[in-house]
Length: 91
Image (cartoon, rainbow, N blue to C red; front, top):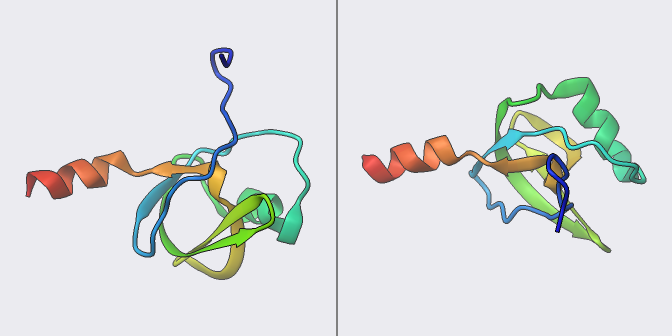
């Protein structure tokens, strides 16, 4: 069981075009492909972004965002944008 406020580092299942929110999970990870530095420099916590592509590398999953083509971000720094999914279901 995880303590309150702690997250399990788990990749999201994101497809091209999915809307996600950046949650800025903090941990001590290796910074492959500058993924965490890219997030710190470019993303806003709680910001909504669109998945352009998902990449798998060893034990890591990265996402490329439509708003930042060519940059990789750790997929577990994001959660699905449930608000958009709910609005789409209601339409």
